[in-house]
Image (cartoon, rainbow, N blue to C red; front, top):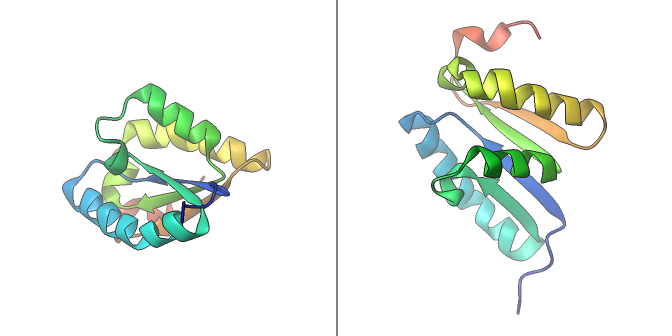
Length: 114
């Protein structure tokens, strides 16, 4: 039986820190049945391998849902905070994306004002 057509494009973003990558890999393992049986298309740099800025930008533009794995390393990443996060939040304000922040590790910047 072929997998169903993707109904939802899920973008998983996390820092490049080893512990965040390990957590993302574990999460992706839990999402595989949804990809296979529910037609959810998951994009993560873990799955993409050596992702380029163009691939990340394309994934941001196509996503229906963005799951952000927040950690101190995520909050320390200039690319994530200064480039990608504003794009994701703008798409959410426009009603084209749902952003879900997931606090995966305590971080001092978690209460940083928007």
